[in-house]
Image (cartoon, rainbow, N blue to C red):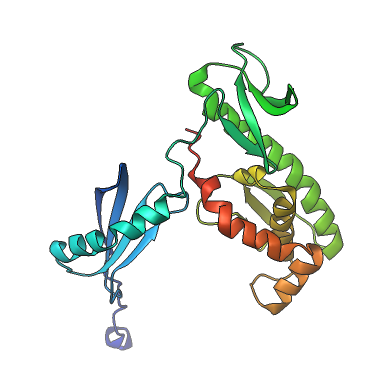
Length: 252
């Protein structure tokens, strides 16, 4: 009888999504339109890397109002997207940063061989073997290896400083965050951080290790983070200004 008197659980209305292409200047941008029951206004977001757009609108908003909003914000979008290079430069003769230093990409023409950095005529280079069609994939694997080598050392040092064990360390290609830390000590990092300067890589390692003691972003966490990495504010500023450009590079 009492079971019959229980109120049924409220279910959240499903979020309706529509996919389309929005032309911004000479760019064809994938646009996801989300109708959300809690949205009271239209919000436009450029996804990390500048490869796609996301629009959140109130449920039932007319298409003409959405189109009018996009027209009004065309200049804003052009300005914001201008900082994302349309050409990733991942080709022989192009450049790719490693630890903050631009390296010229050299395709060796050999079918076999390791991807490695070196110097030619006083210029830093990354030599890539294999088929040219696989250039991006090989460069991504190289950055992943370099990021792991750096972060394993930095994480070990910071973990020893806080007296907390690290269960595992993994490399991923995440868009929403540069790293993460689970309750049981699993750390995850975006391998794209290998393109950033060393002080930024150090900050990322310190940030995630600090979460081993403080699973939050409260004052104690930031105090510990700054203790581990005194250059924290400069690194955060660098990521804020340049992080999207690193996400924008297409390695596929």
